[in-house]
Amino acid sequence: MKRKTAIRIVIIFLCTCFLSGCRQKAEYPFYRMETLADNTEILTIDGVLYRRDWNDNERAMYYNGGDVWTLAYGLGQQIGICGEEDSSSEFDIYAAAGDDELKVLYTSPHNFYFGGTYVRLWLREDVSLGPPTAEMVSCITVVWNNDDMESKQTDDPDLIAALVNAYGSSSEQAAELPPRGRTGCKLILHHADYPFLQYEIHCCYSLEQGAAYCQNDDLEWFALPGEWMEVLGL
Image (tube, rainbow, N blue to C red; front, side):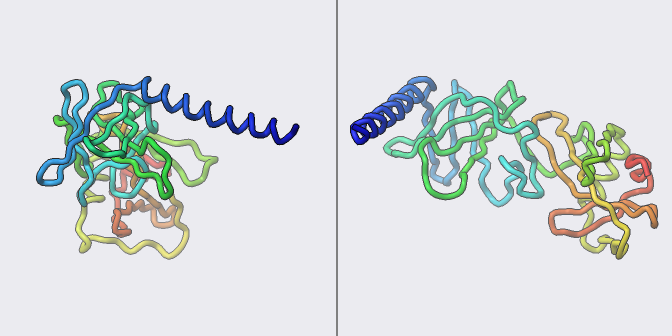
């Protein structure tokens, strides 16, 4: 009796999975992906062209990979399914949370597979991203490594420009950090045109020296102007 009950449960489970898969395919529209002769991948949704940002100069990612813009609020709603012609691989299409105009899209495999999460980024044809500039940043949030400290924020254009300039400095301008007495925090840069994207820069400061520093993706540290110590409230 127990065996028959177990078999019924398995059958019901498999049928439910099958039917839910059918409903999911029927629930979302299907869009065709294409790979061009130069290996560029494109995706057209309701007449709007998206290109995949996948090369070595990728400037945005689903997760914080360092030296890139990342999602401020995570993935949004699924808006469709896509795949290439004559290919069994299909991908779920997601908007970025807070991106009501669908300026960037993300796709992930529709079916389960073994391995890491493979999330692709797509940029709308009129959207471009690059390393942060003063004009690109609307404000900066200071998030302390110590959870007991309250975060701070500044939209001072001079302070934003000073940080961006220090962050983009050459290796010859790298600074020596004080050997002790350092405290760390993160500087979250908010994109002015795409507020659903943010850029994270590591920062540290020394109360003893009265100096603050920011770190680039090559793990080099650069001194920030003294005004940044005032922003930090130190």
